[in-house]
Length: 413
Image 1 (cartoon, rainbow, N blue to C red):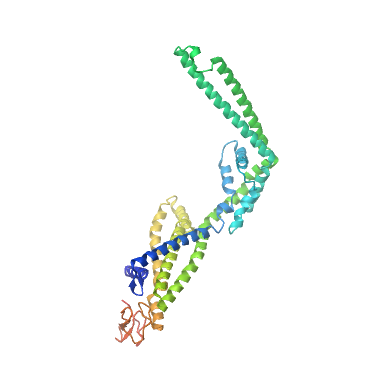
Image 2 (cartoon, helix red, strand yellow):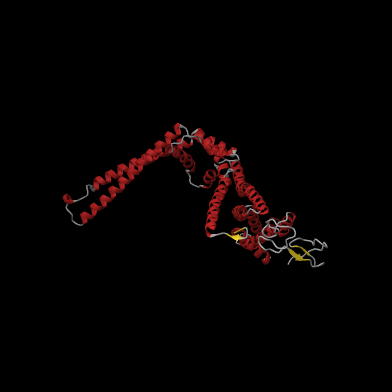
């Protein structure tokens, strides 16, 4: 395997810097590298764009995170909190589109559909977000601001009162004091402010009750507490999240495979015709197209179906020892790499297939330029075309499986 890998690497680096058996000069090499970088950036940009072509789980189930967050809360006022969250957003936002339109919009920009349960969820939110409830929330916010102002005033009064006590202890004359608050006046103002704060809090409590007891709010909260609906949306969201990396890889492959096929066809054609520069550029393009594909495949192995399957198996057999997944990948990834190399050796860069095609077209086995059938050495690169048969000792073409004279199988060394 090491000899095959070494030969593959030699062939790879030779193809990246040779035109018609002549090495690239420095200026041409810089141009080639610049072209490679430009194309590589655009390939990754295209991959990123096409990976988002299909609707994501978050876009297909936009209500899931909010719904799940509500169900995980334990605060007694969580009903009010979730309603106030989107009423407050409405007050801060100039975008007056309905929640239904916001949830539906990704389906018009991506492949896939939005969950009907989430669209129904959005309809309930739209009903809650009516002018009356918005006004109630504005009143609550206004009174909350008043409470904050009164509490700040109380803190200032207490600070000044404490300073007055310190001046009194130090013997500071009253007419020279920097504080305007006397003890009796401070207590009176504090009591009045505390009374106002209590009244405002009671009003806020009544407004919150009024908000969550509105018919549309009651219906929305009933939906939030519907166990069956939530279980359905949670199950669908998890399923979509499970398959999403695989769908992304499929679209990325759909983007790369035509480019690889076209690049390979041009490269083979250029080699057959002896177009050195086209063969070089098409070879670089092939490398650029293959590199992102291999990277995406390995990313998929880390987060896709295979990773999930291995994690589930290890969790089932060995509990929570998920660190063993790393050991599995340390063993699996080299095997995958070995399989890719064998694929290249047997199909894509198969020396025997390449030699057979070149012999049929009277081309050099090494540089693929046109030669006469009687030429033992290539006049372009000097490569010797024949090898002695191990059986009949006649000269037959290199890299072919059988001798052209006796038909004996040739075992290449």
